[in-house]
Image 1 (cartoon, rainbow, N blue to C red):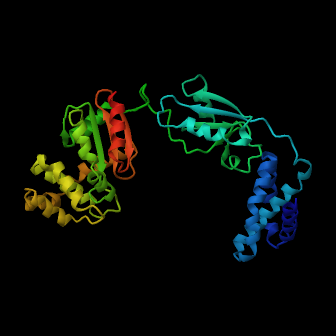
Image 2 (image 1 turned 30 degrees about the vertical axis):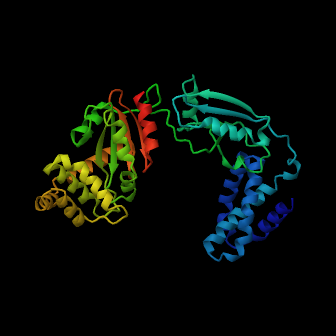
Image 3 (image 1 turned 180 degrees about the vertical axis):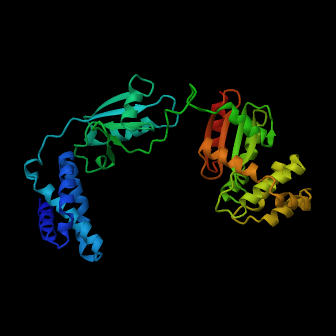
Length: 386
């Protein structure tokens, strides 16, 4: 109770600031609404969080900051006047935890999260209810409460003594329950196969292939679409860490690779480099992928040079003068930007490298973000092959 008395004293002291009248009506309306809507525990939480702000107040000299602070203190005093002392020992509610999952999500790790919750002593008596997205009424419930990603872990109350281990991560929902923030990422509303993979529109896949050079087995069951940037050091790492070579050794008959341009805006020569690669393919499509690999090998650490790339291409039997003329004409700029646009709109690409592994028979696909090692690609390819 000492901290409450301290807050009340501070609020009474500062509410008499000359500027408080300017805010009075507004404060009374907003604070009144908040008092009626929030629980005692939310108010107590606010008081504790503001303690540090109170201690720091005297070091602030900004008039605007001071006025806003006075407004906050005024509202706090209204909270304190609510006879908190008579409510501190209220009975805690029984806890029900509803877990909403999707059987199609193979990477959600929901049970691992639940194991962690069940090890918390203050949840020993909690009752767990399990629902799947496919069950009747679940989709409607999620839409009503604005839940777009799964898994979702819903508490019926935030009124429990947990030392803020869980309650500080609870977000109130429209139906007055509370969602635990767990960084869920599975979108159940996306079109998916019975195996849980996203489905790619066949027209999009055909467009990608028709404007690309395909390496290895063109008729393979699996395609690996690699969105990349010749200036990207992480793309170089993907090519130089043995991943591409191992994939070729183990899956060359079942997989092909389709290189797509994604020139990042903060790489000065990335767009010109993308055009240069296309110009290489125009001269000799058989050298397209080998020169990409040679470039990543030579420029592996933010040291890419377009002039150096011209020399590298010349060393690999490409006519340098013809290459420079082709790049200067900008004839492949539209192709590079189109590939980038499709990557953004269809696959949500924001950086490189970004790999899309596609089953060419079922059109199922999965995305791998970053320069992951061979084992990650192997696992994804094998899942899509089943």
